Amino acid sequence: MKMAGIELPLESYPLQALVSEPVKPVFPCVVMSNTIHAYISQSDKGELVIGAGTDAYTSYTQRGGLHITSHALEAICELFPMFRRLRMLRNWGGIVDVTPDRSPIIGPTPVPGLYVNCGWGTGGFKATPGSAHVFAWTIARGEPHPINAPFTLERFRDGRLIDEAAAAAVAH
Amino acid sequence: MLLIECPYCGERPEPEFVYGGQAHIARPPDPAAVSTQEWADYLYRRDNTRGVHAERWRHAHGCGRFFNALRDTTTDHFLATYRVGEEPPAAAARVRG
Image (cartoon, rainbow over the protein chains, first blue to last red):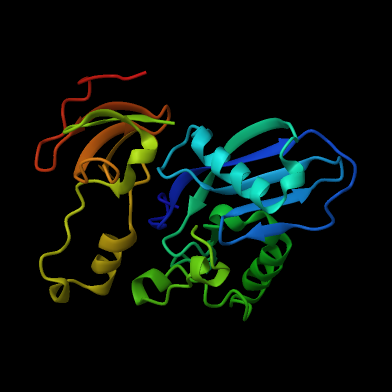
């Protein structure tokens, strides 16, 4: 993007997650707590997949602090005491691209034929199919789909931020 | 977790601090005199450096003061911390493991 003269208001933060040992099916859905901030679901292999928010500082190390994962596990154990003795098998971190309003940027750039779909931050994975659909629509028709129309690069200049943290009622 | 050397209190654990983002970004003295793009750049455009990053930290659960730091974002090693108003130390000032 820099080569094309496009500046994106992105910063890269570590995001950690953990999986537990596999257990028999005990959890039929995804649960996300806004108040104490953690999410949990069970994979087809039986592992509980757990995570929360990013570490506080920008980093490309793909790792973060233990206090972040401890906070997530305390929240999970408070919600579901039955998981207190579950052993965690793996903990890892990645890099997430975060925008100032925590909402993605999906649409055209000032450069003709150059489109951008980024800034999904901590919330992107589950939106992948939908975002691909509206992005393909945008590219094919040369104009955004109604769903991604507000998610412009220019909204940061124009003050039309889309506050994902407020919409999801949880600090991002 | 990180161990961060507050210039006033010494080395303290990360949970005592609040991250303050990229350092040395001056607020335009007259907001009405700059364009909307310049104002948006002040608010939102950041270098997101992959390497030595000058940033602010606030010792929220200690002395409460802001200070600056040089941290390598590819290793999370702090090269230096320095007070507000001071010049960033030369790159080889100090390396912490």
